[in-house]
Length: 454
Image (tube, rainbow, N blue to C red):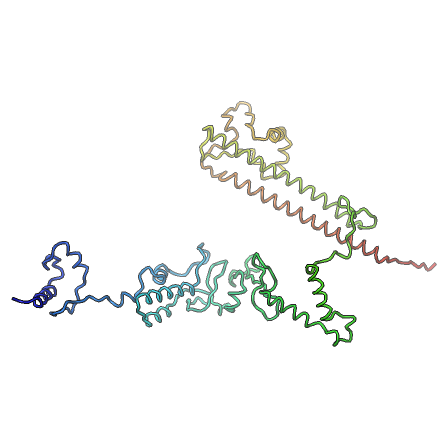
């Protein structure tokens, strides 16, 4: 009788000679053990041995990245370069995506304890053939920048753009193809006011806004300004010039008073100098200036009346929408019914609307504060709840009439208000100049003597 060793050897021989396609039953095991045996891959060089066999994992299983890795996903989904004009989300730079894929691969290799330098080197050599840029070349790991207009990628070398300048100082990049000098152009950030510094100034944040990139550069700029002044003992004209000692004394005195502040204007500070936009003293305005102020004030009044008309238009649009909602609640309309009131035809024309407001119907409408049912013409009837309204469903002619009319009227109000503000600003500027001129003339007390030859 064979001992335990011989029995184990016989079992190994039987498992090694078994037909893999015969199933678990040919090995003399129960059906419950069949799934376990099927999950074990038999080695091809299996032979007769007194010691059991050991299945080792394939080293390539730890090296090859899974199919869902960033690199494989990007390569599988990429079907070609992005066409110009195609709407898409902002692309992630190629450098960033490849760096993420490389980091993920290194992390997987570190977790498994195996590192294959050849695999990493082959990953670094991957090139996106594009085409990109004005050279229509690949993404060969050179620095690239994306155009904010067409979203095409460009090599910095091809468009003569330095990497440091592009990453720090470009606020909005527009490629040479899209640049028109009007709406589309490359916008740069303001650099630090300290000479030699190319960092952006702190003008683009919400806090600590400054023309310098840091407080240290601000102090350095002031130190340079002080050093540019002459010293009192070294200057012969120190009595007539601002010296370093004088300037430091001014800074010290201002520090005790809460810092520097702007004083009042030397001229143009007379109280009660203007009343209703006109001067209270004679000989202040010329005839041309007086005519300009009177004409501008009349034009601003007309613009104000236009804004009042536009606001009435908005009220009429709201009342028409309320009448449509009431018809829907009463069951006369459904939610996809148009409901456009034909009295809104005058809304888009200011003069026609002003004429309609003066009619008895317009006056009655704004007196009642709602858009009542119009009186039926002779020989016509119809449902009073829907009279003079478009009853079509999914009407294409008046599609989105409420939003479109409201948006158009709001834009007209904005443009009119801007025009009135510009006129008022021009009037204020003229008044300030006239007041300063008058006060300066009074202080100087200049006079002209006319000598007659007779």
